[in-house]
Length: 502
Image 1 (spheres, rainbow, N blue to C red):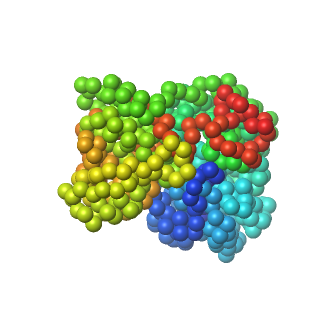
Image 2 (spheres, rainbow, N blue to C red):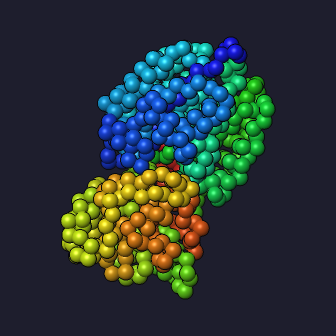
Image 3 (cartoon, rainbow, N blue to C red):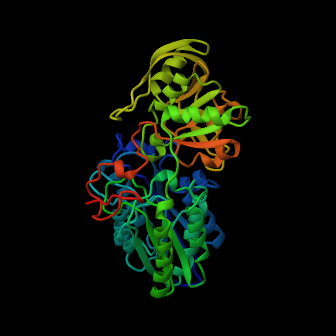
């Protein structure tokens, strides 16, 4: 590229984490609406709507502006994790994104914000297909860099079509914007014609989501090492834990390394791979059945001022569930728990009934109950309407901090000493404001049940006297070995302790 000319860099994104075992697909409306994500954005709206947020595209733009590039915003969208992206939705977004990049030609580079675990109805490797279409448009010489989520399931096609893939290093994901900045910094020398050697390893076992946190071992040490292995010659090293609820050949953890020489890239990728494989049996921990979890929380919380947090990990909407299983609620009520709260329960019908009845009223009905989940059913009974909200408020925690939440008509319902947050739009419980917006002060509770796997730790760990992992019946099994895979690559272990998929 002529050093006198300002580089023209296209920026865009298409994000989806696909749980192929979930019940609800992501249609066009899911991307155009966005829900907890911003709605589908095009052109300058991308820059305005995502400025200063914790998204990779925000980091791309921030770093591009610092480097003095001419930013060409194309199209960016995301939808909540769910079952497959419908064929119509994938083509609707992919065609528009490719058309926007085509219209922006000539370009000096492309920065994309992807997830890395997108599966469409007609394509097992949605991200690989998108990258291939964009590579065909921009040609072989325009550098193309993409950011990936921590849970990306990386395919050979993705590695081949992108000049570099850069993944998040934190779970909870507090570094998404920083990942975008890293991607832009990696693109910078490529604008002068430099290309890096690539090394890609797919690891031989699946890792349960609940044990992937980078705030605890073994991942704390592994991710620290990956960052420390970067140098002037090794420009990027990524370990992706993978999203284990995707029935595709490329599901699972992987290593990516980019360096000035093939030998250097291969050496770093091999070092990280050895460390992860040596730690495989450490990806485990203590779990509790619902009644057992509540009993242990009561024992641990006796006389303490801070709440015990119970993570209802098998009903996490950020992994593709509908956030409406009732196992933990029934356990709280059966035990007669006092100063207990649970959220978020997705049930628009009950939320609407509460709004029609008004604060102070008692409503009767059936709450929640996930379809197709063995051992789960609605909770039928009477509920006091303790508070109502339009569902709009500002998040303050480090994960969604600053974001405007739009959860739709919402209510705090009470059954005895148990408060229930019911919402009309799905969202993982990741922020204390998700209790406060309906009048529940989380610090004043004895027990808090959160429908989340790991992200809740960003805002709740600071107030917890203890954190328990509960395995109430839900659509997201703790162990991937419980999922009915058919398409995995042969020989990969379904959990750190096996068995192998045959």
